[in-house]
Length: 228
Image (tube, rainbow, N blue to C red; front, side):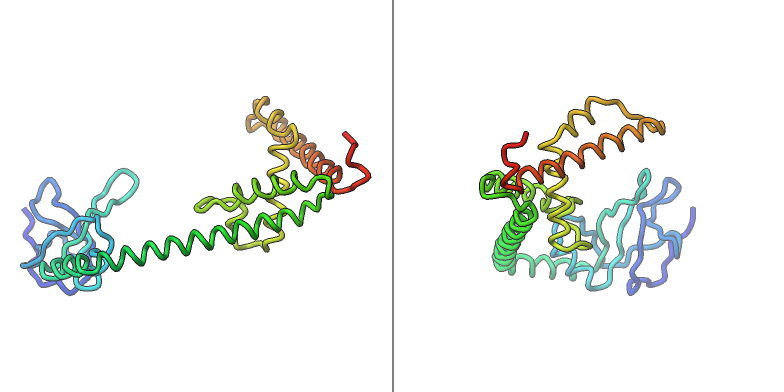
């Protein structure tokens, strides 16, 4: 059996792994089998505040290999550091919770303002005649709610485009999916990776974009309000 590394590595930040079948000792890539420093304890994940406090000092990250990825099990660190972090967490719990509530409310207000700005940008892009004011507002609201969803990869969350560009792209996509036959034709067709099917998809997409242009024109020009 391989001997444990008894040198003092407590000042180093290491990734350590549970004992292998042929050994009872933790191990790391740098030193093979390694001894957990005296006075250290294991801290399982669960409290991000405590973990951050403990990781500010000496510690080893405990990891485990799994299929296709490596899982973090927790950290080894001096017992007194873990206890101090837990005590501080308890003493500041109410204060930190109050800050979280305030931060959450601030984020919600910020998101609400952004959604309103996005809806207004969509409304301006639509440019519908007064006859279709209600429809314009409904579309603008629907577009904003969909395109600005937090955590999504939708156009409303990108930072690469201006607000006006995002509003235009989101509005056209919303109209394409909700006010043309695009989805009916798309979902009633079976596509594969064959070149012919790809060309057919491009044809459906092109026709849908033309339908979006006609939809916009019909609702923007007062003299064309009654054209079907």
